Image 1: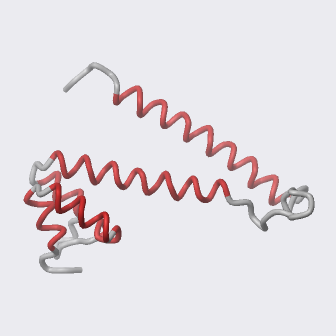
Image 2 (image 1 turned 90 degrees about the vertical axis):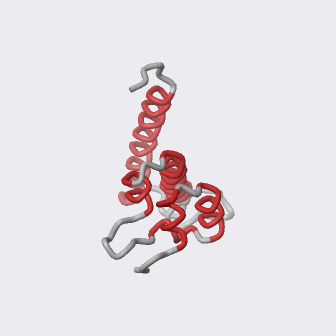
Length: 125
């Protein structure tokens, strides 16, 4: 926890270029908090910095999507090289993994569809 992190100061002041550059080199900076335990997203909202807020929101969403994608495309135990089939094929735990992965994919598609429909709607507040 830093008293005055340059990243948090840039977020508070609305210097989007510095926020983008800092996160490009030090992704862990998004977890910085000030002495009042406020992170970059909260500071951007409190100080009415919409450009910084939208960038931080998009970058965090991308991080979550990337980690979900990586975990769903990796088979537990790996693959038998000779046959090209999963090592744990036929095991109850592997079947549970496959079913839960399919359910997660369905929820992801539903979320993305909902997100895009809200994003492209013509209603403005």
